[in-house]
Image 1 (cartoon, rainbow over the protein chains, first blue to last red):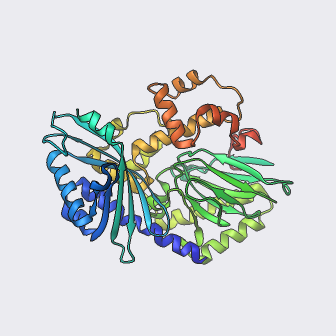
Image 2: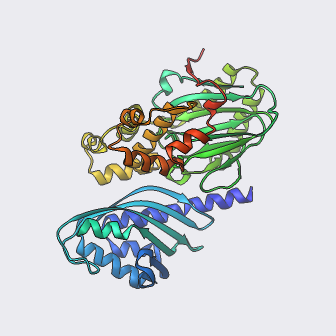
Image 3: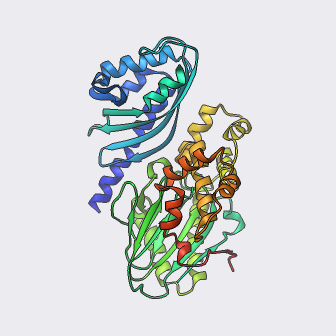
Length: 145
Length: 278
């Protein structure tokens, strides 16, 4: 029975992750960060070690830049699955049209549509303190070039 | 052993896809493994037989609660059954758990949640006991229907466009343009997707993909030989690559492997037909 109660707590954590994605949809970085511990870790995994940093620094910079370079950036949450006691996996489709150069990719005004996996970890205060994000970066680059 | 499906009464047909009873009519002589692809439905289940276990992408071996709510599955899962199988359940239309019970369905994806953590103990005790005591299938089905009716009368649910849109995806077996549903919804795509996610637990496009794979697996269930090009054309896949990608993503195996190895219920019994309530 105690395992089940713990499982229920894990499930309720999904709400913060879904709200984070909805804030991303609104292109509101401050609201996104409001669901997070700013000191927490973010890792944009396809970027390797360069994609690792603090949510309130690297995360803020990359999301702000994405919104600036892809002004119509939008997402659709396909599914959320509670992974273990404190982690939630969100399957998300992110799409947008490039209006400015981004991360070394010159703007050709092209659109991208890319499956992303966000793994969120939440602390006991229900704040997101770790985000690992995975996508097919080669495909992303190919779509924009 | 039998697996029978029953139609709900007209009042509940906007919410209930069917009721079912799966009964081994005596103890199994050995462990039975039954697998299922994701089918796009949530359910409430009462187990009046022996405990069984579930394996999916998340759980290696989960002891399934004796009475539980099953959320949307997005991957295939297997059940490991021993002893006596005695299971009575309600299969819901995709948005019905949110419409009738106001439940946050996206919380339940890939889960089996004990009903005692969702409903009041005395409510669940009543139906657990009644289903155990029922001596005929009809009595068991009536218990299930009474359970839903009591909730229906309490909540007085009002289905909205999301209920209809999700039901259209079911009726068309996922073979439709979600953009047409958005157009008819008088909502922005974003609002439609958000409301759909909150009531069904998945995005509409993803849900349609799951539904189509569920339908496809039902077409090939129990068969040893399949005309794949015909199947993927019948299921309106854009091309073979899309078909294989979706099939592997949701079932975890290639179509050929699946056909060779799958242990769906259709391998043990004849495909059930839906019966009317007496």
